[in-house]
Image (tube, rainbow, N blue to C red; front, side):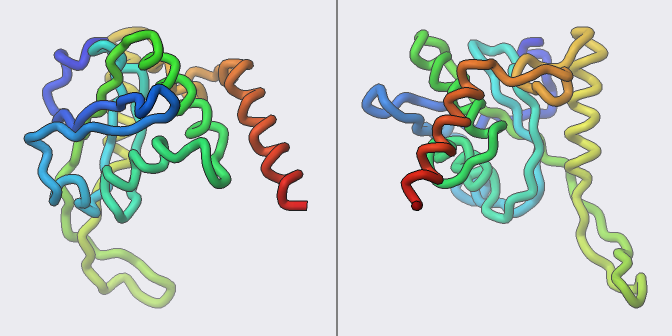
Length: 179
């Protein structure tokens, strides 16, 4: 499915190769600093040459900036397999000369009573990003008959073997170096 068919997403920017050896990110000039840091939960889309490859959701408090940093830095620290593998997929596409862009969908928040342990009196602003993410995935599947290629869990598929083995080797070396 092509991103041009989506009517609710705003372009954030695109991944780039830095010195040919690691991922970086170039922000769309129309995407403001305030939008980058907006704490509102979000749905994000990764595209390769305009085709949607991944639909994800995040409520990280640092906004889309923080969400993207999880991907950009997925080959350091202690990343999970999803981010580690997605980094490898993005890197591979960029190395082939393809364009990997990011788009954002934000649903408006609404005030509602949120229950705690003792009462349901406090009204808070809530954002339906999980429902929005699910709807985006369902819309994609209805249109194409399947989930996006990089949504492995939803597709019921394993990660690409070579990238998953890199992930295992990375963590093996990381734990051995701590001994």
